[in-house]
Amino acid sequence: FGRRIHYHQEVESTQTTALALLAEGAPEGTLILAEQQTAGRGRQGRPWISPKGKGLWMSLVLKPAGLPISCTPQLTLLVAVALCRAVRAETGVEAGIKWPNDLLVGGRKISGILLESRAEDASLQHIIAGVGISVNLTEEDYPEGLRETATSLAIEAGRPVDRMQLLCRFLQEWEQLYKLYLEQGFGPVKLLWEALTVSLHRTIRCRTPQGFVEGYGEGIDDFGALLLRLPDGTQQRLISGDVEFR
Ligand code: BTN
Image (cartoon, rainbow, N blue to C red; front, side, top):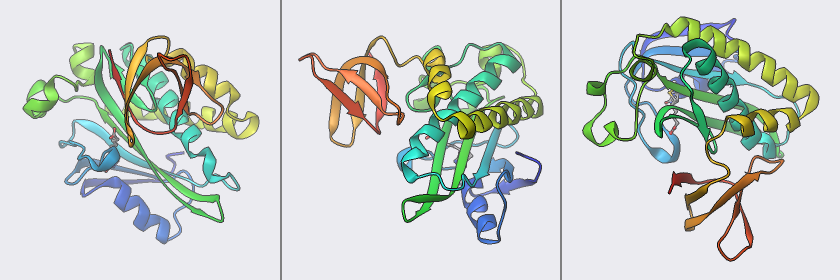
């Protein structure tokens, strides 16, 4: 992974560049990296702030041969585990994973992951794993509304962080975990995710397409869905949504 790198000064979104490269037959492991994105995309149609030279704005091409589309949520969690391990190892910053795949430090977001996939006959053709890590952003880089909820590795570590070292570490972690996942399934990854998450064993509120649900985070299931215990004692399984802490 990352042995073929397409490095750009400026793109609209590395996700869009990746899609164009896939149309030209880009193989698994291709990495698209940009210094700056002019139209970085977040989950649920939100914009993603990607100032020049301050973060890792990248997309990784995956072609998990023969995996069913139902594995996509597992892969989302897999990327988060690789990223969290890389951040901790390279910076010492105690990042935690907020379900499904945001990285938080002290309740503030430092990284987001966006998976876009294409399937045929319920089998995955490709996945573009978009990863944004706010590495060396300062408070001034964030618009006012975001300062409360977003932070960067440099702010948290109290020093600038080497982006290339972090990238190499992430690719190493990713390669190991992906291999483990393809050989042994989701079980070992699930354990790693549970050890790194901040979304379990506490009361959380989750914004879902159907409205807010509040409950106690009990675990995730074998598909990566979040299991919430509701106040009436029943269990609810969430496959998508945004977690808020109480
Ligand atoms: C989120 O938390 O909402 C996901 C953010 C994903 C941002 C990354 S930056 C590189 C890649 N290109 C994009 O346009 N988005 C992803």
